[in-house]
Length: 280
Image (cartoon, rainbow, N blue to C red; front, top):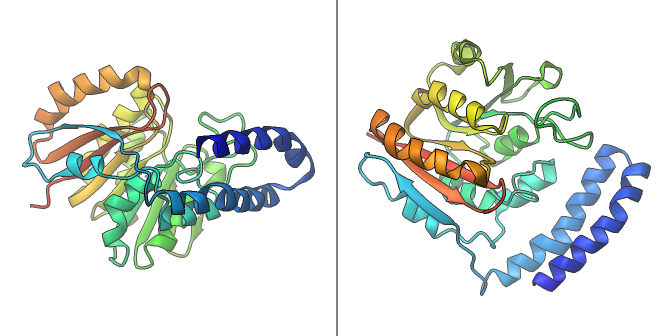
């Protein structure tokens, strides 16, 4: 399987410059999806019957153990899911590039038919001058549309610092937010449409420790009982700082929450903090 992936990466590196010079962003995205489906999704669907790769997970928190860390330790990161296919088809990097979707499927799939409220910070700006830009071939709002497809009875909300990519569609509404400005985050949560809390909050905004902490501390209270909060793309250089903060501060400051740190790339940036609020 590793040999196949190596050959696939070599071919991609040769074709990428030519493709980007001659095709539109939407055509590039369609080509990416077809290539991924044939070269990665389908082979893994078969191979995952015998191949299993599980993440390293470390649990924190004083809340009664809900089995969050244990649940995440059993996820087969090699096995593709419906969420992988949906997110990649719509242009989100949660499946094709970052491979977060096996974790999310384990956490959310039982709620697909429920009227959940989902919020995601970071719409995926394609402005190359913006921080954490997805590049000119990025698809702003792709993940929000993926959540809408996966949760047909749900309401999806999002926010971004790039006002130029904010939009409103059926069951999707987005807002402005500066993740480094606590007053801006409080103004966000004061919006009438966002009252009543969220079942799922995904923080995929500015990938810095300061930004992660700022939004988490101003947003955990927005979780409904049983809700889940996730910080994406945590860099391996910040592991020790996160571990210390989780153990010494958050586990005591938030006694009704359970924390799980999920390591998928060490070294690397494809790592998660998963937080679950007690159902009671």
